[in-house]
Length: 521
Image 1 (cartoon, rainbow, N blue to C red):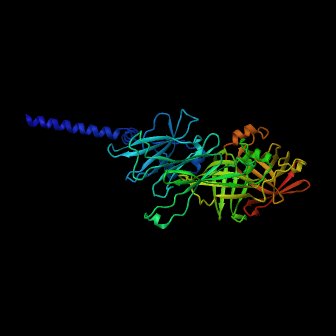
Image 2 (cartoon, rainbow, N blue to C red):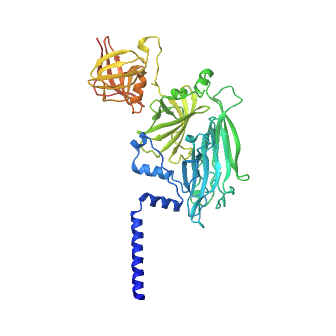
Image 3 (cartoon, rainbow, N blue to C red):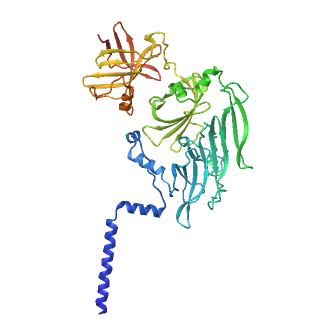
């Protein structure tokens, strides 16, 4: 009897075990992942990507980007992640995390940072403390970890802009070997610098001895330089350089030196126009090729930056290497423009560019770069730039021939070409039509034509007319433009176009044959 009972219980146990295994196998995968996330306390952030990203991102870069914004805790309702920094701040085996976030209900409020640490007792990550930053424009926000004071501890450096266009820099420093012990204890991170100025702020790195890198001695602390308007001067471009140095006794950065930096004497009315903060004014001013100016004041044609606001591109060229960055956002500053950009090929590489007006043909550029936008003083792109001698020129309106736009029709090997007085053109060849923008301009004293095509292969019978810019913009506005540049030779009834390429060394003619435009009868 007992033997039969045990046999029945064994069969029941085996059946229950089989049913449990079957349930686990057939359970939907998303429920398993959700259960794992609940156990680990992590929150996976999925960032919407636009059409540009899908074209240039590889799967590895996509995964790396998602990991860079994956938080180790679940955020509160209404909190939106902007950036994540993983770093060891207190020297323990577990890496800490700084989360930059914005409260969805406070659109004009500051960007906040949260410190996340691993709790050994509970074996989970938890939010230890929060702090608001001075940054209120989210797309200008950046943070990095850097040993500022030279004791091989890591400080958190936060930079960005306020809504009024003020540059800000805050530094949070954890005492060596300690960390906050609870949500009300913020003594673990001390605010050792809180700077705001209508200008620019830079961290000046100094060379540290080999003994510092070997962990034997301390290194010199880095200083911070802020550049703002000289209130005692009538010239808008006159600045003062305020240097802040670390005071070991007070544990804060304090003002140590003030130096006047004279600016160029420029006609003040033109200066106020450029620095008025009106949308597009300064962008139009820098729309050109700019050469690097060496310490001796000489042009270095091996290094230049091409700012192209209409196509939302910035091209960096140095020693034969060209880097193309997508122009993402820009904000006016007191002296120019603050631009955020993203590399088109390596999308995890981002740069913020602070452009300041130096004169009517020169600018000062400061570049903050790297995946975490590390602030470095020895950046090779920092310095002064002068407008290229064959700068883009818009001609006077004295004669029809001097206008950048014309109203004419031509026949050519490309098809029937029509130039419209609003700066648009269209080429009809058979059943296809191509539209875009054009401009006549001067290069090294020679007339040139640039065609920026916005689409090709459209059925001419159903395509919107060139006289309807709104319809054409709707159809072609999201397409990448293709540029063609030609030298222009005007004859009595014809125009001869010779393909060229304009680079750092000037005009280079391409051996691709000429195109003759003949006036339509």
